[in-house]
Amino acid sequence: MVTKPYKLLFVCLGNICRSPSAEGIMNHLLQQRQLTDQIECDSAGTSSYHIGSSPDGRMTAAAKRQGIRLAGRSRQFVVDDFEQFDRILAMDKSNYQDILQLDCHEKFSDRVYLMCNFCRHHSDDEVPDPYYGGEAGFNYVIELLQDACEGLLEDVLRQI
Ligand code: 4NP
Figure 1: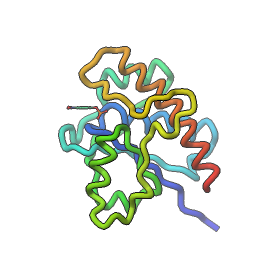
Figure 2: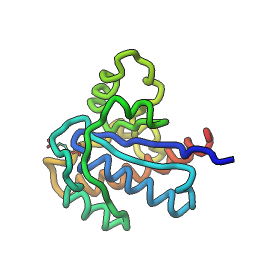
Figure 3: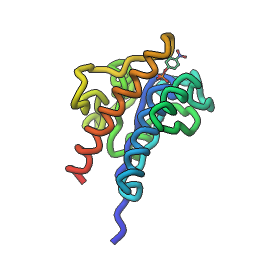
Figure 4: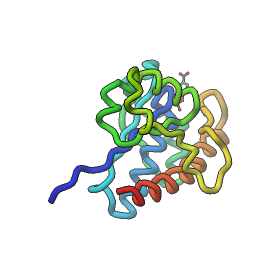
């Protein structure tokens, strides 16, 4: 029997910093553990600000320092994503609220999570927006997302 892959969507504001990083980190874990047939990832932004752009160069550099490759182009979250993905992971509370507001009939709220809920070693409740800060902020996003992605993967593997 062929089963459909379990699908994760990471969402931030611009889809050029945090959510492409989460996607890159999770894809790295899936490759290491030979799970790419079972679990797939994508990312999106709640805003239209950077549609079509590659990940931010500062974010790409921070990811590369940890051996993570970022790929893809920014796209905006669309209502159809609720149907297409099994879990939608918001980077901060504002992203979380913006996503839920698009779920007009409140049919999909159980698919939407805050990414930091899956951290096992950090107590942050949001992935901070690094866009207007310095290099340390970008490095911290990678560190935090590595923790959250590992916890998320364990949780998904328990479920599927
Ligand atoms: P992201 O970061 O949501 O993690 O992709 C940002 C990117 C762009 C902007 C803000 C945050 N911006 O205001 O243009």
